[in-house]
Amino acid sequence: MVISMKKIEAYIRPERLEDIKIVLEKYRLNGMSIMQIMGFGNQKGWKEIVRGTEVDYNFLQKIKIELVVLDEQVEQVVDSIVETSHTGEYGDGKIFIYDVADAVRIRTRERGEDAIK
Image 1 (spheres, rainbow, N blue to C red):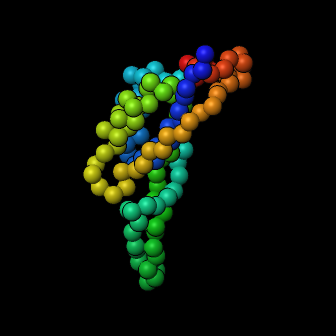
Image 2: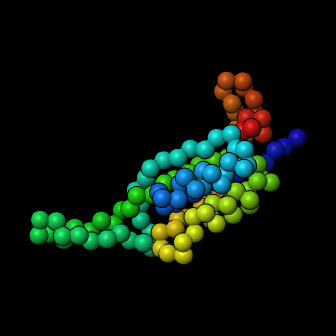
Image 3: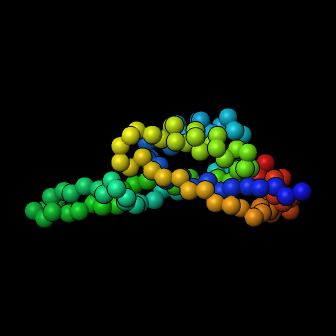
């Protein structure tokens, strides 16, 4: 039996993280990785005058969330992240979805769906 899984990688505003964690609890996901990162897109950043010199801060703080879910959970999880992250302004973020060929829980050697439950 082939179990199909997806990796969801979401780049969001830092202030939305706690709300997203609360919303995703209803899916009983077994794991999620969160990283503090710096980046830019259409939002571009801002400029400041520091000691008389204009400094361009074009990298902004973001949060990167990574999680692996079953195919049947993808749309609900993505919709929840979008609904919780959306402000309608530049910098709301992006979500990327990748195919996952397999997963292995090292401790028990479980594979596939059993490894991500």
